[in-house]
Amino acid sequence: MNPNENTQPQTPAPGDVVQNQDGSTTVHLRAPFEHAKVLVDRITVHEPNAAELEALDKGTGNVSASNQLIAELSGLSLMAVRKLKARDWATVSELVNEWVGKPQATGGTS
Image (cartoon, rainbow, N blue to C red):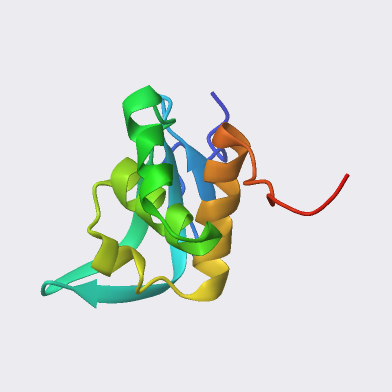
């Protein structure tokens, strides 16, 4: 082993996205917030199963559906998810959309 090599695990920086060994993914928030007297500085979500995908049906719009699914997958309350700043929300939402596909607009003519 090289004595100059750093063997300590690196502390993730704000905005970092880390794939965990259990298959979940952690987003380290750029803008941590307090919820229920606890500092939320990261959000960890797992790939949804079919039952969790049902959370999409409960929303009335794309953002509402995304918020509900993020809450379901992360274990945070919907109220806590709604406190995410736009850039952090976009990072988490983009990750979730990779798993479930982006919602498609309906209606119109073809």
